[in-house]
Image (cartoon, rainbow, N blue to C red; front, side, top):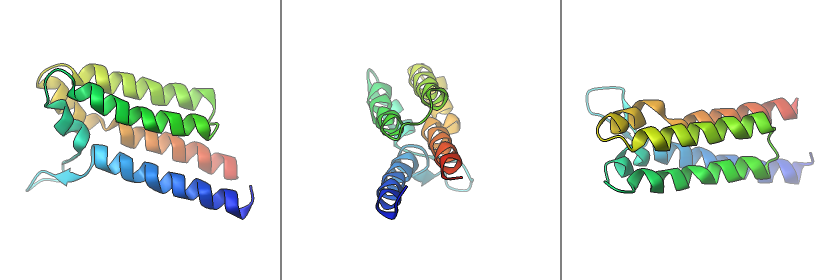
Length: 120
């Protein structure tokens, strides 16, 4: 990978990290270390908030596919999105699940792990 390709990849990773942070860890519950993001807030909207959040998460899946991550990584990312979206639909319990599961952060870790391995 030449320096221009590395620079483009790093820009993509910066955008994905920011998306992950916005969706999973934008805010902190005062007096605790518990962080949550727009994913948990959108989950409070009845009748579709979790679906909207899932659509944002699909952006990370698309990016991982464009980066040509292995099928195993793609399937792990997809499984996290499906689990997060499905569980998030459950009233109250789903909202609590969203705060602690942080599927986008998990997916970002998967992406970064495979990118690091490919650079070795």
